[in-house]
Image 1: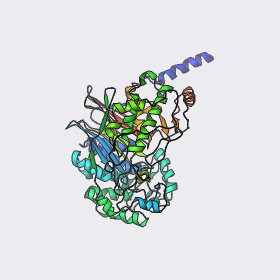
Image 2: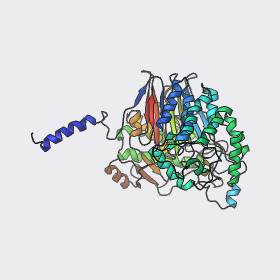
Image 3: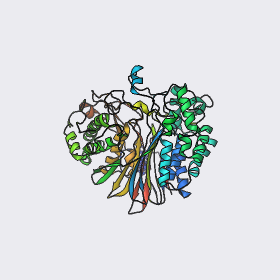
Image 4: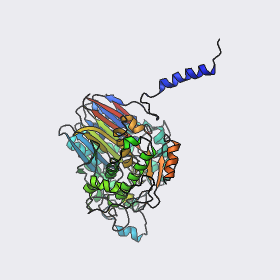
Length: 562
């Protein structure tokens, strides 16, 4: 037998290594897009993706499948969503050839006012317990969508989630990790351990988890409609529970709730139209970031370059200062949306960026007044749904009403207690919201439905996806897999101010040379292995008549079609 020389070994190794290289030549790990003709489902949990496809194959449309997937995720990913939270949607209706927006966020309790927090010496609204609980808008959002655009019976739409809740499903590693993290701080609240820790501990990876309480709740909703949740026994149980815990959310608060149809707001970005929902969400911030970036030659700077990252970070800081000052419930304050997303305003804000130095603070504009899941579904008729839904802070407030199988959200924490602030707490007011769906059209036709979950990461994540696609020419999957940056420490809608420039976290594929150069410009670099969001997207190729699907490689997500 011949002796293998080191040179020969390296030659053989290079053949195998090169054979596995991505044909794109990109220096980060990615995978192929999913391509299908008849329908596409992209969710953060493979079993939920399969539920959506089953609904499509059974004759349902994208709206039906999105509701079914959301209900399934409320069971399987309670660390990100559930019917105790709110919902926002942008959808393309193939029949009318138009985009529609739905704001399914709930309001604060009628009987709780700002004086309560002052008298009890609160400097902020607590993160957990009964005080941050606002009306959960998810279920009404489902039925509002279904009444206008749905096709199948709601009982059939909810049945897969009911069966999984009754018979159980294997918990994934990622969700087990987040459930266990939440369990340690929420198990002290009545009903939480009974629902999520039946054996005295949170489920581990691969363990079959059942939620019979949620199965019964879903059955009641399937039979009695949205009123079963907001005016029936469920509402009475929620009200009684919250009162016992010292909170204020009442039966009357639930009974008076309704979702709102809103017009998505657009900007032009290099010939593409990017759409977000208006406040009380933060989608406008993504548009403001992009409006500033489009006046820079981003493509020439190059992906991952110091110049690009610096420009992006500074544009984000500028947008978030306006976010902190202006974004709130539009029923309570006149918000200058058209000015905020105007080209003239973007050009004025752009002048504040120093290309050589990171700013420690920026002024908000002076204008005339005024953990989460994301999924996207498309069907053979051409309908496309961009849906995001959340409890906030993973598993929410910890408030787990008796035998209902879900946790109530803690969105009220995001109100400010500063008098005169646009987002200051008031009765029957919708809090500032972090969850935002997005959509891109081209020449008035649907192009991409996408979203990226993760608190304040969302608008900066949306903007990074758009630049990856349009400026850097990445495909749909690459745009999501590309390493991201996250800037934190900006001024907040709760009242905190940025005074030191905040901090920047970068995923591991950015070079050390770039990191050093950012430090030299005055940016503070903070290591963080997570917190970069969770992405799903569907692109429609009208010329070929196919859908392209992409799903977040950082989480459990799956894109699948047929």
